[in-house]
Length: 190
Length: 254
Image (tube, rainbow over all chains, first blue to last red):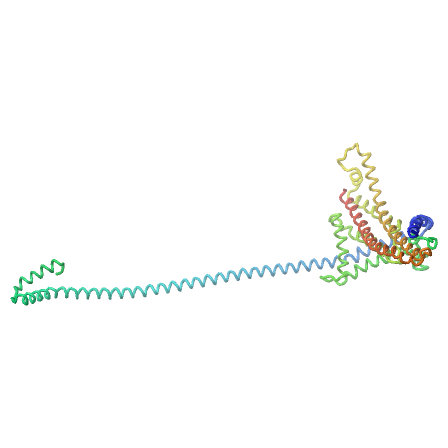
């Protein structure tokens, strides 16, 4: 309770204290210091303005301008480097593609040549085989013709021998021959 | 009880001559001494901040650049591209007020922005400059178009013109009283709570309990210091940005 009373007393005292202390010193315009401070303040303000605008602020402005210039120059350099790198990448891609195309072309070429060589080889081999087959067929044909020629003789002889053994007679060779010839003709073999 | 210590909340605003006999002979007050210190600190911040000229700034250089860019951006965004012309002026004004407010929070110092004479002088300077800029930019058309906007009904002229004139003339009043009152209120509160501490601690009625309770006002004052730091920066900002807005009006006519 004492505290509250104390605080209340102090708060009540405040305005009285303000009035008691010869009013606000700020409103005491009879005091020549009040106006003198404004005159001095104006002088200080003008000097501060001149020093700031002519000397201090341009320095900071120069630092900021230098930074801006440096950063933009660095950015330009970086952009140029990037452009160069991009060009190099394009060159590299081109070269790779060209090399790949060349390699593929030479591979295709080699395959083509190998195919042609193989085809030529097989053609000669085929021709040789063909010739051999033809020769073999011809010799077979000759052998067959010879065998067929002999067939009549063999058949006639066999017929004569068989007749001779069975009958003990010497067959008429002209008849046997014609009979064999007729039979061979009937089977389509001459 | 309370009679042991009277609260003299306004004594702190009393002007006294500074710099010895020489200062007294030219009426140089402690208020002007604080102005000199504030100006010196502002110049030192920029000079020592800009001196390293580093591409990657150190702490002080960053602070100087931040101060520069803050006011520069404020001028350009509020006034427009023409605002660059007024940048040194707004910078001077902002730092004159800011340093005055902040230095005033130091013990044994003096807050020159708590004097209505100083804030009124600043506000009158602003309004004279704004009017000069407006007249130099637009000639006499400023008076006809600013105080009576074209297109407004002629019948309303007897109302609009006095209202516009009063609002124009009230600018320096509100500008100066806002800063003055904020500073005075803060410092009076400090004094009052500090006096409570002294009164409570020395109170015979409370005995040993007094010093314990006296911690309350001290704690309150600690919180108040933080609040006053905010007010100091905010009032400087308000003063500068209102100046920018008035300059915008002068350059662009509304």
